[in-house]
Image (cartoon, rainbow, N blue to C red; front, side):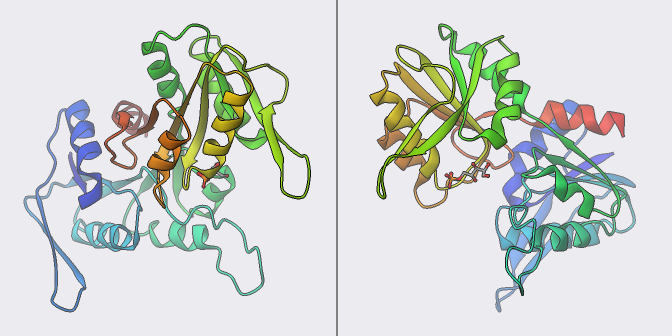
Length: 282
Ligand code: R5P
């Protein structure tokens, strides 16, 4: 068995290959003069784990090309970050269900798929083949443990992400709550933990995705006003669009961390062990 990956998932693929005690196939990635993508894989195997996060449109096309390049192999596909998953419904007439479109396209040429903390579990039903979604919540919990903070409070930005936050908090038996938004006036909102008090505590806001960072930056400012000692932010998928990382640190967030489903300078957690365990179960 060998691992093969798209250009933007090289680090995770290498970590995964180490755990699986195998090699990553070398791939030459380039572009035709008209902008179309090209790739050529070196020595392929008859069993392949293909790894590629859909972080942008080029990554999506590269992943399609890789699967086709591996057409003489038995393939399992790992999509660590599935872009387009947030358009999981037709919100307005005429829109595509983008998550379904992506799920259908990537279900050809592979026997099964692994995703990580997919935005909505409902998206899994769009894959016409076997799919497993794995969670890095416990790994975020283990990272928080390594910081040796005194009795941290784990918060989700909203009620929808509370079960994820609870899984993180279970790693240390810490308090957990979700932030609640109260509209004070036409222009003012207040965000505070629903039941607990953040005063004098180290607070970790955890979510599946940090995109613009807007929600967490606003929450951090308010938590400091409520007396929080330090505010940290952790997510699985560090999308960090529109200068999100700077926005968060500017809002006083002491440390922003993510996993390597999207490879970033602040990727402190690797998904490699969890993916390897899921592959062994397949
Ligand atoms: C939304 O449902 C997701 O779980 C995240 O909360 C959202 O993507 C974060 O967005 P932003 O970082 O732009 O506030």
